Image 1: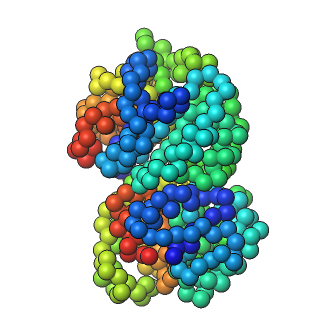
Image 2 (image 1 turned 180 degrees about the vertical axis):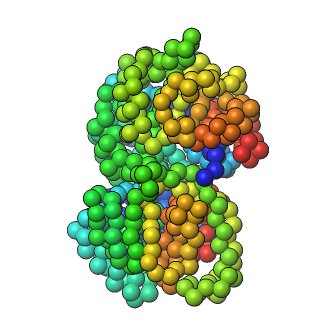
Image 3 (image 1 turned 45 degrees about the vertical axis):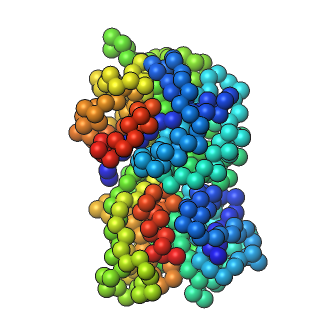
Length: 234
Length: 198
């Protein structure tokens, strides 16, 4: 199984455009979502992780997700953001994506994850866990409360049992090439081959991640800035 | 015209996008009377229990078996390939279409298989299972995308490739084409493959 070079794309639900995020704070418009996905497909990225960064409750992503169905992609696509039982029922009728990404559900709604696994298989479940790691203190982002919080062993057991892979996003390094905080991996009790790391990824991080036999990396805005770079990184 | 089974399950739109990108026309099939002459694609991304139950409720299982035995080309993708076997372990065990003699089993330790693997099909290699002589495309080399937790174990001879981890990547026999990977999400290789099997 080859190491994967994936790309994370953020989609702003209100304007329906792709956005860039820096340090989990600053947002800038990247461009039309169809164009962004189209070019990532042309660059033959190994997998696209499309995230709608909803914060809090009450999101309704169904029409947004269904509108993406008509973008002819030949690359694997995973989607996440605001997915609950009702929206899952709708979008899983004709899934144009291979996998579903969950964040806050790992904290408090395992039912929706189990239902997604029933509909699409366990291989389709991906955890998206932005984190901060300061002075050996790990905090994981929960989008429902829009905050980073500490987690216990039970949380990691649940993530391990319910998910197939885990995207670990180094929140402060997001959108930069300053380097991923590899030391965080020592604090997370999950199999190493389950991790797709994201945030701050540079060339030496990719080499290091390959050596460690991680599942892959998911690069943010930078994949689009260096258009023919993907094959070299692979 | 290519018939795509559309029973409210499976990644039908992705399959249609794939066919359209190679200028193939397709029709979505949700009842036996709608079939047109041409290949039949059974898509992936669902689970065997739910999928077989829906096929049976619409009598599409019998129609697919009938058309397969009369020579229609059947292309099963991922789950579509798995339900071409006799039985799947998924959803506590499901009787499947029985087009290919074999079983679908969970990967060891309930692991999953996600990512890209190499694919090489050279139709000039001698085989007794599929007649490729009329194909303009003779060889497909590249990489293909896998995303599954069950695999097919066949008990009959096919033109096939088994990966190092014992996963049957593809198995062809006469008019039956089973693909464990997702050709519709395998970029350039998926498109090349389409011209070989359709």
